[in-house]
Length: 280
Figure 1 (cartoon, one colour):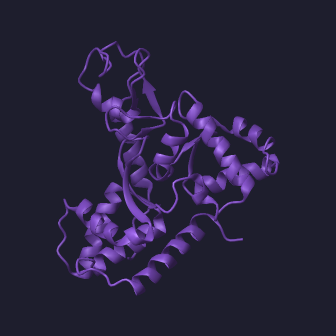
Figure 2: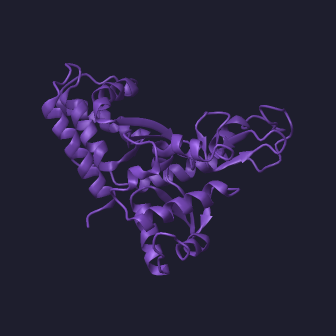
Figure 3: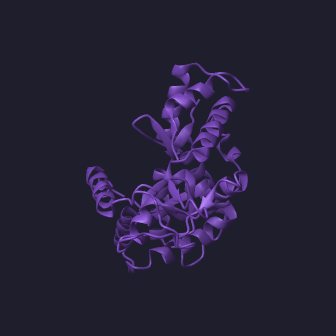
């Protein structure tokens, strides 16, 4: 059974193309917009620098003027056409390095059931339990050991260890989870698409970053007032402060401050190893 990112992208592409046949496209929706959308569909999510490069390239191919600082306006034009399809290009931040990403998300449903067409019931249950472990943790990560222990306790249908490991790999490949040294967290794409669901499902636990006001999974929180911040946001906010203090209650911030230069270096290394976008 075809499933995962490939199946999801194919369904979204098919729905979009069918809608384009039935909806009279507004004059401002150019070939450049359509090309950009088609390529973003195939990727699912794209880093800001890659999106800007794609924007420029699509405009070049379509021979239209490219306002390089107007990518968000360009995306808004696409979103106006996607609204009847209950899809939207959303902008979010990577919790690893703080860089902007653009993701195409499904707006038709607000719950995790939007994944139901791609996964079996026990796979969805495993994802829910994994999300529970991640959000209830202190650092925004869940160990593979804890997740695999849950696989043997599923109510829908229990999974063997090897089966659960394969399902986790699929979640990583489909960009719902990220894995690092046997620890799992929510992928940037997942956070962008599931933000409202997570905030409503975990109202007493899930919080927004005090700096960027987006959902914070990997974060630090003030021990006095509970104010939370993303690690990259903390690095920026406390960069020039010799004695870091909470932006809300002004109490001393007791945690190690993330090294902003190290975060930027890691991100540059990742981008350098990425393949360039091929022919559009």
